[in-house]
Length: 95
Image 1 (tube, helix red, strand yellow):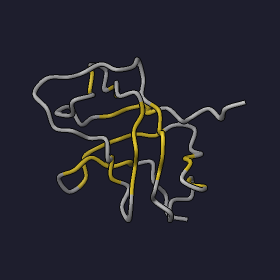
Image 2 (cartoon, rainbow, N blue to C red):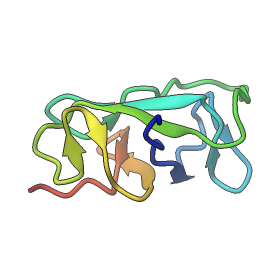
Image 3 (spheres, one colour):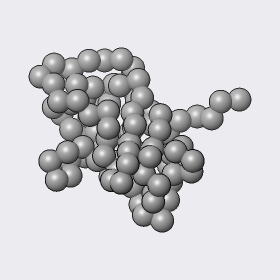
Image 4 (cartoon, rainbow, N blue to C red):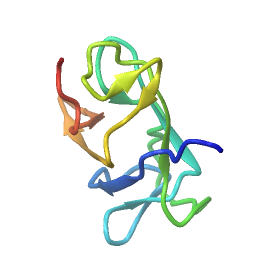
């Protein structure tokens, strides 16, 4: 049985290609990554694209996040917001 991927519950980054009304992320899935919990799927765009009703977290490469286990996010869901001029997973918790 495939593991259920955590949903993107809220995204306030409204200039993203995948942002939609109600602060929903409509990418098929997102990647969060590297040394910092940046939303690597963020793509600035004037027009929005709707690939899915609600995105899920496909992969997380932030090794120091307490929800990350072997690049799989185990949070019940995540939120994306602005941080220092880029989109970040604000559900991130060091641990």
